[in-house]
Image (cartoon, rainbow, N blue to C red):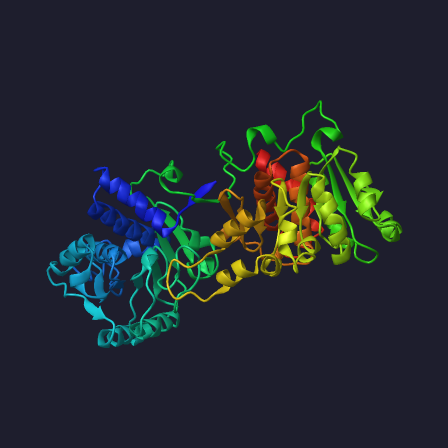
Length: 550
């Protein structure tokens, strides 16, 4: 697991470090600027070769007489702007031609940012930065309109500190951002996040643009992996500024965890007590028995997909509970999956007398009427239960009735539409257009939903968010290098529900089962690649497990 932080949490950690006397704000700002410069040269090493020149020779061309390296740095009115002034100074010391623009009043800069502003204007031939907005913004646009555009543009305007509504004066800034988009030959670097992106939610506030490189400090922020974050951040690099990485969660309330598997660490989503391998002395009932309930004829495919998944993920047995009218259809399609007749509420009650059925899945292809009849019976049994698809939509007219029946061993797996049906007020807040940061995020929404439901909620999407009623929260991000667009195919969500059910049957706790299943779901898609259909996902699990064993 990797900790993600909100802007407020990061500020609290920095402030605690400063108050401890171990570091000053000015030192942190210097380290941040140095981290940005390092990231630029690591991403584009060819600039290192061209840029190595004495600070006494600005614009030094080098032995090959190449065009001078130019940078435009746009600094904001807060500490993010202070980072920008450090970047500008360090690049100029390497011989770059650097022009700085300040979005704000230098007299109102925070103390550390003001100090770096003064350091910048004290440099030999350096001119005081032009002030934005108004006329000088048009001047900056003119810079990008010339044939010789800058090599690098550094955006150090708002960063994580975008906490006020954008005023009319940002019209010129919007023009600038749009102008930047048209210059693909300019290397666009964002400090913390591209300006206009909320670092807590990944929502755009005003106009944003796509950076090629985003440099974050000490930890990823929620907004780097939520919402529009992955679309506009480009490549995200995390640079240390000297704050201890270990134990950040102890100094930040309720941090979000980014689900990752670290094969060199015990701190992954598979605990030592719940290994995915099987011992030589075990038997099928040692690994649980999953019951997946199906709908009627012509609608059994989703449940069959869900039922295949528990077996592949290691459950000892999987049974499909089908109505009499669908028995022949299902019997003709399954082999390792067992078949059980479940006609209605009484039939399910009778089947659940077998206590070896320790994990239930209801929803995929179940049908709304059948879901309304069977879900209460399943929940009354108190077994670990996954509710998906029709099992959620069936209660859209009365979500409170569903919530009253849920227990702590339940996992709800809604996509956006199902989430809106169960939690309409929360969904409305989530979908509201933000005018300032921090905006209400998918993390906020999932946490609130889990608290209301009293159980685990897994809110699906490329930025899947998983939360429990106590506020523990994690994100399974299928973005950046973990992108898996092939999951946008019919039935993939049914397989995910089956993965969770299988892990519950094996004895995983609900939160751990949801986290592990979500991670494996993405890994299966990534390893299979283009052409994926839902049936392929369970069959890819053995290859994923072999990867984990190496």
